Amino acid sequence: MQETARRITALRGHVFQFRGDPFCDDPARMLTDWPDGLIICENGIITEIGQATALLKSLPDDAVVFDHSGKFILPGFVDCHAHYPQTEVIASYGAQLIEWLNKYTFPAEAKFCDPDYARHAADVYLQQNFANGITSASVYCTIHPESVDAIFEQASRYNMRIAAGKVMMDRNAPDNLRDTAKTGYDQSKALLEKWHGQGRTTYSITPRFAPTSTPEQLEATGALWKEHPEVLLQTHTSENRQELEWVGDLFPEHPDYVGVYEHFGLLGKGCVLGHGIYLNDREKALLHETGTSVAHCPTSNTFIGSGLFDVRGAHFSHQPFRVGLATDVGGGSSFSMLTTMRTAYEIAQLQGYSLHPVQAYYLATVGSAKTLYQEDRIGNIKVGMEADFAVIDPLSTGLIRHRMAYTTGVIEQLFVQMILGDDRAIAATYVDGEQVYLQSGTRTALEFTS
Ligand code: GUN
Ligand code: ZN
Image 1 (cartoon, rainbow, N blue to C red):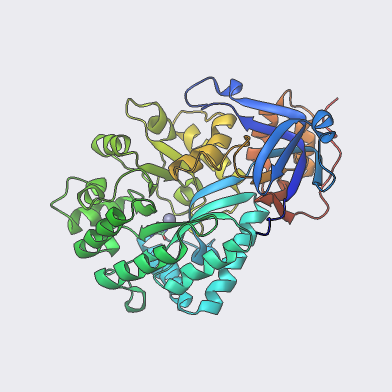
Image 2 (spheres, rainbow, N blue to C red):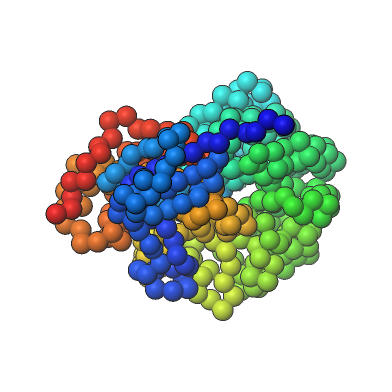
């Protein structure tokens, strides 16, 4: 039998690791860092982390070393809720959720019946992810099976850990964007059987949200998840007040919005609900009891004017639930997870809570991985975990360089990055131990410590 080639890569730089949950313990103590660190990876898995000078001696001759000395090496960002077909409508003016869907989103999504169009859009989307340090995402496609093939095919070229699924909608959508309870089920099942577990791909059953599915479709969706509990499920909930009223009208027999999903068996470990801004206590308790997660989408919530998610309440109530951070592109206004963290900070500030920088980075990495129940593989830099990294140039703009000169420690420096940084701060991105993005012209020297 032929042996598979051993592939060893190593990254040198200022390495950061989460040692615990900053929502449970003192956030300032939840980071370990190696200012001159080395991460060694074999076949896409982290095998060693430590002081560079010591570890470099033990590196085999065939190792490829990427030197990012002076830059911050973080776990790759995990975007736990995004719509790749909406990349072309990001920054669309002047509408809130329902009008925004009808006016901008549905016309864009209708184009994804064309596999070539879908393949190109999927590539554009993934390149934007890499340029922003995002190495994993949970992605909504469109109702077209071709749109699902496109994103999985493109992500597989990089062996990226991605979750995605065919959107199911059988009412309250244009004719060319509706399936039926039966075709939605059949197509999702076929795609799931084709893609789930191929390399690093995960299938996510994707009913868009309660208003665009009939009870029959939600019933079929629940049946499919019951047959395949190994896959994920994603949908939206409680994002916008008009949407809440609409759900009340469409499903008067259920106590609340999450109650609809509860009734059809759509809650549980591996279910990621987008937004969750207007959850009542009963709904929060259900999330806690069932292990259901929420994707906090801050730039979307401000851009489409939806409301303010209560990140403090989600973590510190007597019934906490899992929360990750998400761009929600194209309702969200940025691919940058740094910008997303900044907006999460601002939304928390508006509610009297100052999200700690370590908590913000945690939400964008471990937190999002936890929503997907993949925290044993992605979202942190630990031996045995998958080798996905974001490399941050801490001096990416003139203002940041100036501000960094007045910082007193790494936590303040990380805060400055998430408030002032954007895609210019992403020096490089690694997926499966390989470089998938390198920003040209990034600095290498560390100029702000003295
Ligand atoms: N609710 C249902 N569909 C969508 C969508 O595409 N984007 C957002 N932000 N909310 C939704
Ligand atoms: Zn969304």
